[in-house]
Amino acid sequence: MSHDSRIGLTSDGLSLSRLVFGAWRLLDGAVPPAAEAVARLIGTAADLGLTSFDHADIYGNYEVEAAFGAGLAHWHGKRDAIELISKCDIMLASANRPQNRLKHYDTSAGHITASVDRSLSNLRTDYLDLLLLHRPDPLTDADETAAALAALVKAGKVRAVGVSNFTPSQFDLLASRLPFALVTNQIEMSVLKTSALTDGSLDHAQRLAYAPMIWSPLGGGSLFTGTEQREARVRAALASVAAETGAGDLATVAIAWLLRHPARLVPVLGSMKPERLAAMVKALDIVLDRQQWFSLLEASEGRPVA
Ligand code: NAP
Figure 1 (tube, rainbow, N blue to C red):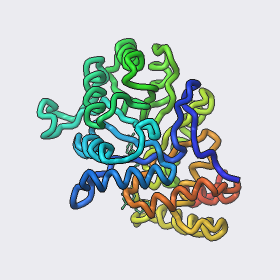
Figure 2: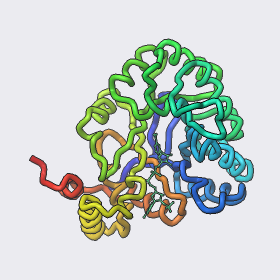
Figure 3: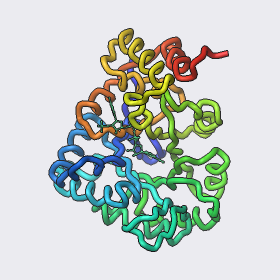
Figure 4: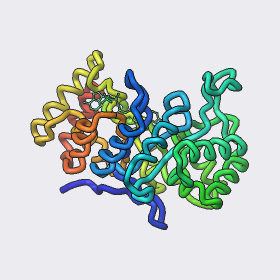
């Protein structure tokens, strides 16, 4: 038995790879990768089946999209063989945005439209497969924001729209003003961060039948480096399930734990290392049984379920 390797988003054929390559950390190394190295990484990811690439305008202090776009220009594959995802609305206080006096959010029509145009230009493409609003903005005027999003879809600049870090009620408000369905909510979840199981996020996703994307599926690496008791307990439980399933790698089991949930979670992988990405792709072939799944929940919470 294995997990589906693609997840359909829309009735007109848009789908994502079940595991998505997250580009947030692309420029985190001591030396920024040259365009050829980025092209190799894109090729490696695509060959592993990670055809969907998750971006945001702000990643790498507003510099990741352009570095990735330079890599795409060197890559030999076809644009329509991959899916490009980006986000907008977080405004960083950054030397690259001197007009931002403080960190804030902006879901105005003007900002969304300008941000998408910049993402398209940086990524050297003429469409995004998926645009997400990055964070809920308390000053959102749902009619204005929805009209801007609908106009981007109508113009062919964006194939589908979703949100990130939204509560179900924030999701419903925006959805109520759009002429099409929101296709995802990208939220934080991992075996270390389990609140989505009980805060209504995953119930909402199943009720409306959209596949939630999952960020920091390894707790941003703290699953391996964390020194708290919880992290140590989870590592021990992951090792035990890895031994039972022959998974070979703790990260593989941590991803398999997410894939086992019926809401069709789509983990966004943050590693920049091909061998680690390859290990996590093996999770597609590992279906945890209920007791393996609950043993990891128990280790995370530090107590058996009631
Ligand atoms: P993650 O997969 O939880 O963490 C990745 C980090 O773990 C990397 O620094 C990686 O380092 C490290 N790591 C350490 N040991 C590892 C091992 N054995 N296997 C794999 N990785 C290991 O994900 P994340 O980077 O925090 O987030 C993933 C993606 O989610 C981001 O790229 C971004 O696209 C998205 N995101 C979205 C939001 C949002 O608000 N929507 C917020 C944060 C992130 P190496 O590179 O050295 O392997």
